[in-house]
Image (tube, rainbow, N blue to C red; front, side):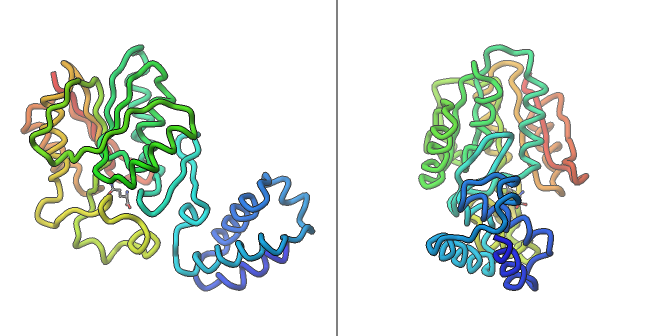
Length: 281
Ligand code: GLN
């Protein structure tokens, strides 16, 4: 195995920082051998089988193309659970874990809750909420059938029950037959003009449907979801959003204009405005 690390360092040295290459090495060896990190260290003189070696070479080729390691391995972790991921869904982000944590802390005292995640992608928010609130009824929407396939597989993998439906939230005629205590969404929010600033691992591999919005209407998902929430939240129900770091003020304004109360904007661990909660009284 130690030769593998040397090989990876040589192949990837101009593309990634050394610490990242080391972390790829551990993730790849863990995946190929189903070993823990201590087992890797204990077995550092073991060599790969021919098949493992070929897989490793294919993985390195994909890393050279800046494909995210999570897609290469087909999995990642979010809020303590394992999730399957592929190019049809966004890779769950740490800042989204902070949003889930906020929902957890604010709703802990409630025993029964009906929750809806709009634009669920991999299902990471909805499935984590069901894990945190086992008595809740959790529903999740996505417009992408391919994303829903991944989300359904993830709920099954974690033995958690979430009701997934193919829904386009921009369709104004939606008339769901139920109401929710909590509606949450991490919709697409990056204006097209920011494409030039996006790193190739994201830009060339993650689904643009989940990332980008037109320059002239960066908040159109927020207004559609807020209008949907006004009609479909239970009294005193709460709406939670992940937002673009520059959209804090405009999102707060939008929600206040629409009649929401108790609007709070929070930063993520990097210090960027990143999430909003509002209540419809
Ligand atoms: N936070 C993601 C990123 O920066 C974007 C997520 C989204 O558009 N909802 O890549």
